[in-house]
Amino acid sequence: MCKVLVCDDDKDILDMTSMLLEYSGFEVITQINSSKVIDQAIAEKPDVMLIDIWMPFPGDELTRQIKKTPQLLRIPVVLFSAAINGKMIAKEAGADRFVEKPFDVENLAAIINSVIAA
Image (cartoon, rainbow, N blue to C red; front, side, top):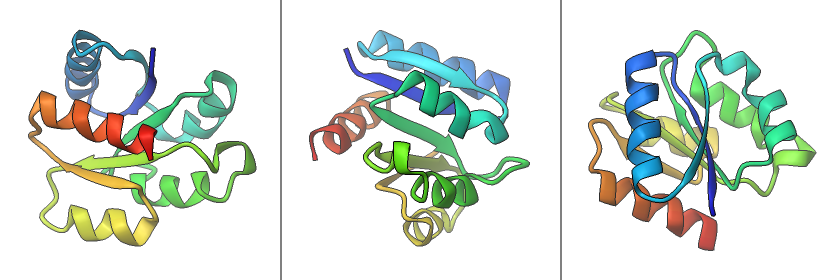
């Protein structure tokens, strides 16, 4: 089973995303505090990370740090956001993919599966 680490500082979005991904067959671990994601990812070894862009410790900066952390280099990062320029932010941060909020559950599951298979 594919393990997805989801980070969003909005508890309602975090809970809803987690529930939808579990319903789609993923094992989900969550983190509301973006400054704890790197340590949690090293410990939990997810197959993919789904990270919100707009948080106190921004998702784009977090992605840059993940991509510089040797233990996490091979883990795909998918950024998600309702930001109009989110796709550009994700690309500049080095994210593997971007998902616009609100998202379609089947589309999100397909994107997660595609980055794992890549």
